[in-house]
Length: 277
Ligand SMILES: Cc1cc2nc3c(=O)[nH]c(=O)nc-3n(C[C@H](O)[C@H](O)[C@H](O)COP(=O)(O)OP(=O)(O)OC[C@H]3O[C@@H](n4cnc5c(N)ncnc54)[C@H](O)[C@@H]3O)c2cc1C
Image 1 (tube, rainbow, N blue to C red):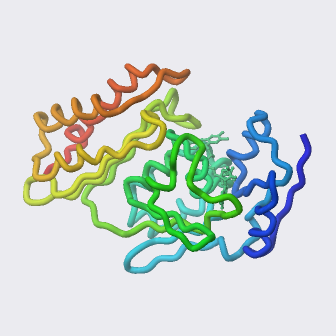
Image 2 (image 1 turned 30 degrees about the horizontal axis):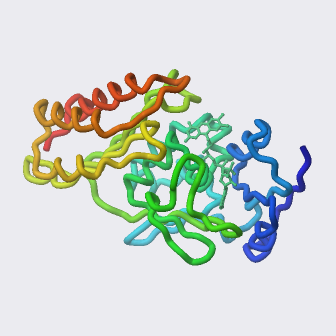
Image 3 (image 1 turned 90 degrees about the horizontal axis):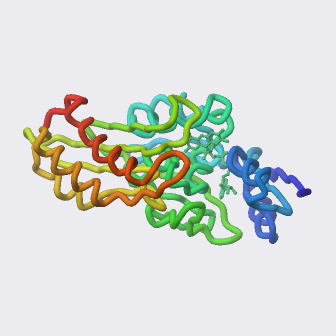
């Protein structure tokens, strides 16, 4: 296997280089290089974004945080406003791989990998993130990701950044169930955001990983939960709803049946965490 490696200095050169057939854009390379080594892809050219300064930024304003495509997981974990604004994203990124993987891997790479087990991706679904493409389009994350490994990114384009709108939540939660505590791909992952009203849920967002071809947001469960008080009875009902809606597969990490059971059991964390609303 042989391919050329190019590291453009600006976005104009990047665009020209990735337009050629057989070219692959690379951010950290933690997914791409593994796929090459496993023989899943055979690029003619790898185009690295790492030297392009206009893609290396984190911007914050009153409405959103914008993350440039070459920002690594480790850099995000060190950016304090992210932890304050989006604890669910911080917690999800914190579980990705190892320090080495987080030092190279990026959130944009995690999105483009489009894995149903993508940890950063799950948090971005919860936060209604938008993906900014080099052609100027901004696409909602749940429309951008199509199926495992597939997105709607047009050929010859690249992802510039991720826009995450700020929104106020009383409770952020992320949990990954794996075969061990670190360096693990999830058997099932779950995240939620809860805004409490006066003694009842005002707003809930909930998503699962590794239970469907893409991250699964359960919007009908979210709608059902509005105005409900979090107690054993409520959790019992929603855990049954969750079990009916997730559609996992059997694989080396766990059976479909086990995953369904896990998803419904994880709903009881709402009570165990002592969430009062
Ligand atoms: C040992 C190991 C452990 C891991 N653990 C986890 C884990 O716990 N959780 C998890 O979610 N993931 C995990 N991963 C997967 C991976 O590390 C993450 O998905 C990471 O975020 C990928 O980022 P990257 O920058 O390295 O992507 P890259 O490998 O550079 O790219 C990934 C894909 O995105 C494309 N791409 C990259 N940048 C752009 C761009 N700007 N525009 C368009 N396309 C682009 C590439 O062509 C490729 O298809 C693990 C990987 C390894 C090797």
